[in-house]
Image 1: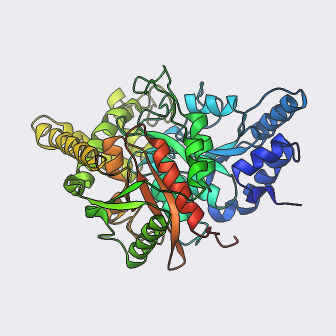
Image 2: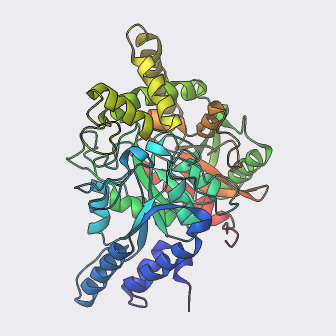
Image 3: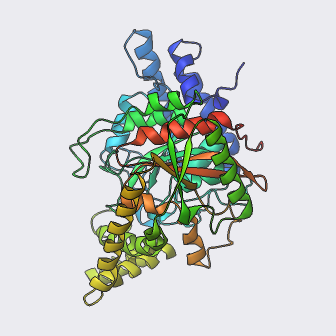
Length: 491
């Protein structure tokens, strides 16, 4: 009998629709896989076995009655623990929210339920999505299934690792500066950041409101596109949601899988053409470009000079917004409360709660952001960073005047050893060097496996104009069709 945990989401959907296997059987197989490997991976913070089996039974019942269900109905999914799920613990990887069970669902959660996907549980992450390695989770790090001595990327390392370890065929991540794409690159999976506003942020615990973007994690480009189609689209509950339909990302992925890129212009970003990347990453990048050219793509070099300022600009804008968003965690309304014994003032309780509940990286970014927004420094730091953001947007717009998509490595290096960068925040921040510009611009970007370096996965990043998400899926699927699939070692 076929091991259903090894099948793609698309294939699972087809077999479920044909009633070759039941949703309960598929859910049970994945839950058993989670139980078998979680001690080695630590991808989940909470496994909702009862809820998953109940959801799977409901899908089977609908099929038995002949009711119409979606193409992913009955397919299991893991959800990053920054997305609220009614009645299910949602911690954002932080002690300050330990045990909190939201009274409502995020829009994305609602859409997953309506589409019949079976939620297995909530995945591990860097606290409040602040990190590039999932080592800043208050509940211990996640381990890369390719080499459990190495990081799985961050902040969404749990979602990427769950997909790579065959614990779930699909997962939801969020991308603020690369937190879907960078984990995808280092775990050999596919991770897509949709156009900002193309997926709802309602029910997403905010880190940086002008950057946060929920998106799909999968093992194939088609699977990512199918999930994107489920979660995308306008949401009146989110004031930043774009009132336009999702582009035909599934059709684009299937078109790309035919391997024909005739007429597609690839823009090689001069500033990111492997510069600063490890030799093996740079070599995989060049080989990927050659593979795309063989499929008929035309290569043009583009210059985006403001991209070199993206990293410092991001680390002023994101911490500034986080210092505002995290002010709500005050030990009064919900979550952890420390020192409330009648002997401390409100301000003291708030201070004690935040000291106990927030980890070192969250504290670092709150302090940095509060300083950047303080009187006398606002214009010099936050104001200047926003001007750089405008320049980066102009660079993207100019580049897309001559190219259909832009390509670059996803991250400068492969998965690094656990603990090797936690003492040097700047070296940790460099993991997002190539991914941050797309967040500052707001356009879509995807990471697709592009080979190995030293036996570890490398990702190619494909960036597209805003609301042209279908373009990146077409190119990503074409590259996927041209390269041998990556298979992680057996855990």
